[in-house]
Length: 279
Image (cartoon, rainbow, N blue to C red; front, side, top):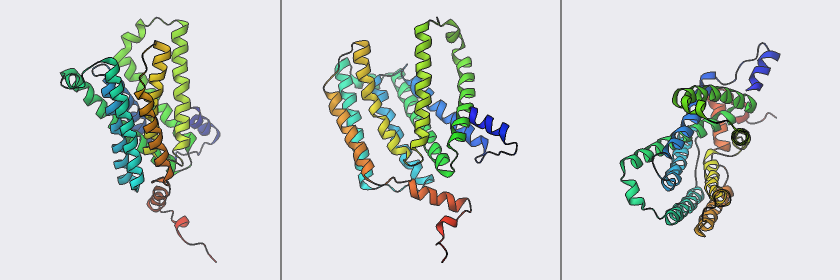
């Protein structure tokens, strides 16, 4: 948030390379995508959320193909299949551990509502990822991107929190442990979004979402050691499939790195880099 402010103060003629409303839309998609998936936990099981959250991957690949001119190979699709098998194993192990029937949960009205929230949130989050990749790759304005998206995201999430959960926030007993947990969460997100912007300058949104699937495994490990929950051996099998999928995906050239930059140059009228060098 401080970077654009300091730039405006130092350079009176400083102008945003990317229109502010694009940053606003991207921040809105990011906030609402996360919000909808979190809301899904109220109505459906963690198994359903883990499985349906994978809907982000095909949406990202579709949007990247349409807007970023991404070209996926068979290796990319095989890698996605490996990751989806891995997450399916994690879901099955979660069902076995909790001894729940996924069939019964699926046909419950509230569970169906939660499933819809998760699917919709995953699609919105996919739009955010592809938009983020587009803006980061278009111009070398990573700090501006982080500042503007952080600023608009702060405004949107603050207003939304006050409207939907104002009473809950006021009723919270703010002890030192709870404050430290909140600060730790904020710092973690700060490093995550900073690292994501760096990664997307060379990588692509699809492999980013494939890599995020490993978070389900680490969440399970944390649940075992923090909340004394049982850990099934199937978790390690699923995690191995996910790691294998990410490895296979990274063996192939990123599908959007070169193609989308060429597309940006043509669209912006800056085709100098596409012309042969002079004698």
